[in-house]
Length: 306
Image (cartoon, rainbow, N blue to C red; front, top):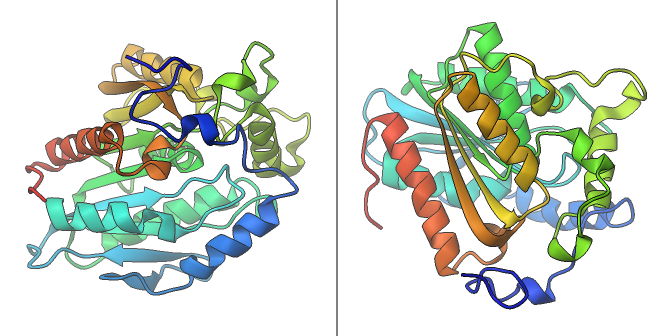
């Protein structure tokens, strides 16, 4: 059931939220505000260096077994904003309730660092996690939100082709997968919140950089990747009021047709990033519960109660 304006009734802020937040004019301010929290030590976690360009914010479970499962989290922000600290709450929950070593990667942002730099940073973090003491390299999940979900999907492809790390699940929350969505003219902007077609165009142009009219590399936009066979099972969550709804459903369908098990979790009337903005709403709690259940099944355990 949705409200009279088409949003989920639990999402009471929807009618007051802007249709877009990120633009060339706002990106510097948003970055400045986010950087303050991104530099601080995470409560209950540590900041560890992967290489000259990459750090991770790491949360380890108390009394972890000798070989705990691992989770690599990739934050969102349209490839142009955001910090690894955005994953603190999720990673801390995963460490506490699932007994996993959870790391959120601080990757470089576009347009200063276009493709492939952000993806290379994430791959470096994945390899670091797989080799970290106390982590079972055969039980690693890659997870991401929005642009981070797009990077996580690309990371699954890169890991498959590289063969060094074999994740057991790709957990994709409203992933940003297809640059071609920016060219659509059939989308009613009034139905969207937080992330618009214009924001999307800005994000993709920033990420793709100087490619210009050259063919978009499939690893930059996973929806363009022809061969999806052999990827790890996927969990994809997206709301019906999200700009990425159609591209996410199409990707889930392609995964299934390629023989990849894929759970599609649709939330009627949910907008982009709803679970982060209205964290305490029942629909957001249910969404996180579904994510934790998928993680527990993939990692061979049950989620501990709060």
